[in-house]
Each structure stands twice: as structure tokens, then as C-alpha cells.
Image (cartoon, rainbow over all chains, first blue to last red):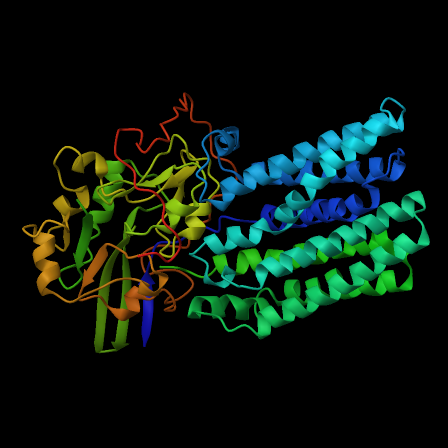
Length: 292
Length: 240
């Protein structure tokens, strides 16, 4: 027999705000990625852009709020910007999120002013290039940087998966497609564009499902600690979050938008809830395994 | 200079004097530890062996906590000590997730990251860490591993030593003589719902209490820490 009879007890430090902000920033980044190709080169004011960017700004307010809430010393958050240590993905993330939030907020302001007639079509077209083009890489970074942040957390072997960056990219794509479908159904976007969003959402959700299953069952883990976390997720304490997350977050939204692209709002809500459940398991299960 | 620890687990009697000396010296709050004595048992009555392992920050040569800290609150001094600065820590807890040894915690009083810092304030004035001084069996040896005349170098030259999780590539500088595999490895099962001499405590959550006059001084980012120690640059993951 062998047993541990005394050891220091360790807290779990990253809780629900982490998976919650993964959901909100994926939807925000993905929605910008969906809107930019539609609008570049256009000079006419659009209610769709006002609604879409308002949603993006709201999602980023939630994202930044969740991150601040998760800090033990939130009053010091400016240290991230004024004295960053650039090898840290937390510092890089602060700059990525700040850039994305600032540009999308300014763009929202310009679109709103153009909608009420205070910005000329020429200036609006220019503004869309100025804000839209840099927001493409920023959106991709916003959606995927957390994978690299997790990889830098070397104390959690389970998070060292090569599949995670691609999976987070797919999450960004399908959350964006569902958000774009939701906005499109509100403003009566044309059928051709709606069908494109629908197909893109279906494809990326399908790919995401394959990636999750491949990542969980096809990639061998490097250590006993990682395998323990994996088993807890698949068949242990987190199995309902994992399997329920896949069912509600990927299968159900696919079925809903297959029925009609105008069921985008329930599909978006289901995808967000399912993604949150899956990420909650992904974030918490490895922290429950002792490192000492 | 390259400071490190050797723990001779064969000498350790599990008296916890190191743990309490650390608590006293560094004003460590209740509920958290900078150093502790992990205790394991192996065998079947009457042939049972109990192992004590002094456990703490490994002062890694390549510390992941330093690399992941976004504000240089966790940093590596030029003499190899991995030190922290509570005045610039934002409490993001990235260092805790980066540490493969569970050596870092959040100080419930300040809401900032905290861990063994090799009693750097004592070392800077020529004294040994408090745990070394108080240990009745001389089971903890601290010193400069680059100095061939130091006691720690003599031990390293003659004794077989082991470290925790060598596969992590962090190059730990907390080395165990007579290290026990069960104690070194983190996945051995606990004896029951609670430990032999303590209950499982309720984990603290939520924001830290107000600190009163929290003077947020900003130490330079030009390679020096707040008390003037030279900093080493963070290295790539897996680099020796």
C-alpha cells in the first residue's frame, strides 16, 4: 500500500470567467470576420453594420469585464499595458484585446454616425478600410490567443495540446457565422449571403466536432497527469459538461440552422452554452489534479 | 552565483520546523504555505515506512512562472533566486498555472502571488534562509552551486540526487538526496477524505481584502528588481 498522509492543499484559481470569456470573444472576433468581407468597398450606411458592431462592442465589454473580474487585483490592470513582459501571453492578450476593442468601438461609432447621416459615403468607405483591414488579424488573434496562453501554462499538461489553436479558430468561425446569421435574420439579409453564412457555420461546426473528438481520443497525452484530466473530462466528473457541451453546442445548432437559417438566434445561444460547458470542463478538470 | 537547495530527505524527521520558521520569517498567512513537508507512507503493517519530503519552489534555472508573468512581478535574479514583487502583481494567476510543482499560491491578505523566495532578504545580508537555520537535522542545505568550495557543491559532487518532474525541462535547483519516488511524484492517492492531522480547508475565493495604503510603486523594467537585484531575461520554453 502507498498513500499520501499529508500534503499542502491547493486552490483552483481559474474558474467560470475563463470559459465565459472564451465564448464572448469567439463570437465577437468571428462576427467581425464575417462582416468585413461583406462591407469592404461599400459606401452606403447599413443598419446591419450598426447592429453587428453594437453586438461586437457589447461582447467585448463582457469579455474585458470577465477578465477584470478574474484578476485578484483588478485595480492594477493598467500594469498589463504600461509594463508588459512580452513573453507572457497574458500581456500579449491584453494588447490584442485592447486593440480589438478600441478599433471595433471606433468603427461602431463611425457606422452609427453614418447611419444618422453625419458621415459622408466617401468617408464611410475609407473608414471601413481603415478599421476593417487591421481588424481581420486582430479578430483571428482575439479568437485564438488563449490556446497559446494555455500552452504557456506548463503546470497543466492537459492544456499542451497541438489541436487547441485550430479548435479555437473553428470556435471563432462558427460562433461568428451564427452571430452573423442572427444579425442577418434581424435585418433581412439576402438569401445568398445567409446561405453562405449557413454553409460556413455548418462546415466549421462539423470540423470543430471532428477536432474535439480527434483531440480527445486521437491525440496521446504526454503525462499521467494529462491522462487523468482527460479521463475526468470524458468519463469522470466532467462527462456531462463534455458530452452535453458537444450535443448542445455543436449538434443542436447544426440541426437548428439546417431546419432554417432564421433559427440562428436559438442556434447561437445553444452554441454559446455548449461551448461554455465544454470549456468549463477543459479549464477546471486539469486544475483539480495535484502537481505536488 | 547560482543559489540552490539540497534536501537530504534521509535526515528529515518531519518536525515541520522549516514550515513554521518560514511562516514566521515571511509573515505567511493562515491557509497557505511557502514550504511544507509532504508525508507519504509505503508498505503494510508492521513493515511500513514513512517518508518526509520538504516541498517548495524549485527556483528553476528555466522558470515557467517568470516567462508567463505579464508584469515582471515574478522574476529571476542574477544569482538564480526566483523572486516575486507583490507591488506589481495583478493577481492574474498565470504563474500558478505555469508552475509544474504547485509552489505558488495567492496570498489571501494581499491578493498577489507568493512563494518561497529563498529568504532573499536574508541572503542579501549574508544570512541563510530561515528554514536552513532552524532545521535540527541539517536536512536543508542552501548555497552557491557555482562555488566549488560550498557545502552544497560538495554534496552534489558526491551524492546521487533527484528532482521533481525532470521531464518538464525547468532544471529545478531543489535537489533531493534519498528522494522517495512516491513523494516526488504527484499522483499518489491521499489516505482518505482528510489528511492525518488536518481537515481539507475551504478554498478562499473572491477579491482580496483592501490593503490600506497600497503604494503601487513601479520598479524599473530595465533589468533591475525593486530592491536593485539584477534580472535574468525569461527564456524560451524547454530551453536548458
